[in-house]
Image (cartoon, rainbow, N blue to C red):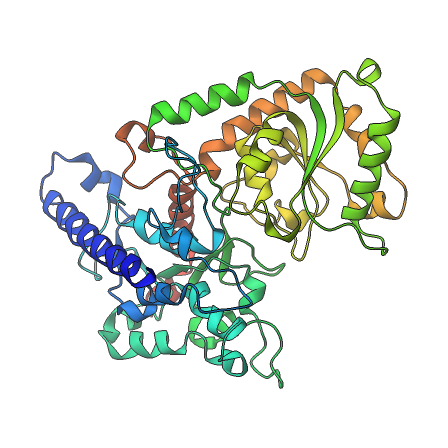
Amino acid sequence: MAYLTHFILLLLINLASSQQISNTESSSSTTTNPTTTEDCNNRWIYIRNLPSRFNLDLLTNCSEYPIFDNFCPYLANHGLGQKTHTKSRSWYRTDPLLLELIFHRRILEYPCLTNDPNVANAVFLPYYGAIDSLKYLYGPDVNSSFQHGMGLFDFLQSDEPGIWNRHMGHDHFLVMSRPAWDFSQPLDNDPPIWGTSFLELPEFYNVTVLVPEGRAWPWQEHAVPYPTSFHPPNLACFEAWIQRVRRSRRVSLMLFAGGGGIGASPNIRRSIRTECENANTSMTKDNTGYSQICHIVDCSNGICEHDPIRYMRPMLQATFCLQPPGDTPTRRSTFDAITAGCIPVFFEEMSARSQYRWHLPEEKYPEFSVFIPKEEVVFKGLKILDVLMGIPRSEVRKMRESVIELIPRVMYRRHGSSLGLRTKKDAFDTAIDGALQTIKDKPNDLLEQ
């Protein structure tokens, strides 16, 4: 089954790639086409032609890592996964690991592609680095994780090396669909610890890398949203969802969808669970206006990961969605909450504010989110309920509207979507704008190497 899926994906992506670039190139000679004149100035992208061993061939190993989930079922629809039900038009069982495949498919629709690397403002590497890393993280190559990416670099140096050497990689960018920490193992670690050393390789220091979570001191990486399960195909489906979000009755004050917090050691998730249990027994609708003070959606053991119905319906009914850090600071749930019009509550700056500057403007956080330092809750007894209940209802309504306005910026619309929907910049479009601007902002002496 995996080999059949791989063959179909390879055929479709190669076909789409050749058609799209051909169409873009042919229209570039037509001065009446606005997309190929001023709209594409400083926006031309060249897609590096990589052997399939760096991308689609990696998908054939989708079931070969016993201690990692089998992701074969989620390869459908170019990485969006299977539809949540047969009549669904916008909702899929999306696995965040497949952001690389989603991005690869979407960039083939980018209107400013070129076949000439010499006129390109940026070069995209369709390398599935996170999927390639699985053999080092969970497979037989765990003791050689420092080699992650070296095969790619060797290819870039040997096949048309002028493309890389023109700017020594400063104009190149790629997507890796795991947190940057997974690729940040120091090269001199002996024995190796968790992760690979891709981002520590001097060979790739110049490349712009898009990841769902960056480090506290990012050098080459920039954070982009985790893919949610919402991928509308047209403007009508998108607007219907927005109307549903606006009309939804918010019967719960706050919601936490996740696992953890059941151990004895103090941590923010344990504090949330304890406060929720106490609040639901001591508070009533009469003195709060809510049918339920705190709703916990237990997502332990990954049971929610590919089943958005478990958490999206409760999020639609909640006013605030709590986003405590887990193994790493960021959460896909942040973007699920925004998609549901649920105001996110953060407990660490690294959970979002220090991450998604392209998609969630830093200066606007007070307009669409609440920040409560986790130390105040865990060690000083600050009640989350007191903070949230202290926000005036009029302010809550404004914040929710600000959240709804962010929905287009954090969703990845379906490939092949309607022209009407394409007028709204989504997470992919915003990431492309950010990557192009990052490359453009590099000092001229670097780009002239």
